[in-house]
Image (cartoon, rainbow over all chains, first blue to last red; front, side):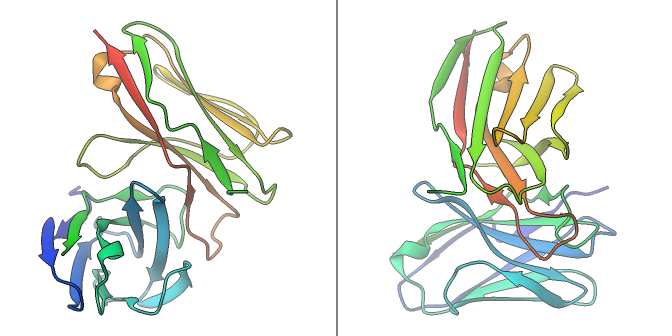
Length: 113
Length: 113
């Protein structure tokens, strides 16, 4: 089975812009979770989608949003980018909602200038 | 107090040594415990997943959970240079609940040839 794929792998944006990141889960996995990883804060949970519904959201401002499509692919959007949004954004998929065994993609590295 | 504490290292050991990696957590509601390995510029890879207190072995890796002390460990036997990576512990409250994984900040491990 192919693993979790994320596009793009690298992205450079400027403050105030918005960005959309994409994630394709492992075939058959209906749950997609998003995480932000920074050197200072480590890996932090953003939100999780299952069957096109957001099940839970971490402690991030409303500028961070996401959605899931009927084929389980997911996108996350960050509006009005700030310098502090520079991070590795990771997507993880699992068969069940918030499953214990989550499989991560390679991430999208976002740099905000 | 952070929910999960993990020594960031770096931890440097000679090839062949037994490595001990540890995390402590603060909330007894956490029921599921995972260890992930992350190579530089890659997404985290699930190594071990345990539910109950006790030991779980998989090849050279042993995960140990002590719920009474809120302490989890990962042991690596016969360590190899290819084990050099960042090891992240992750915990979760309840099975199937609408809750993301809570990660430690990771321990950077270096195995010297």
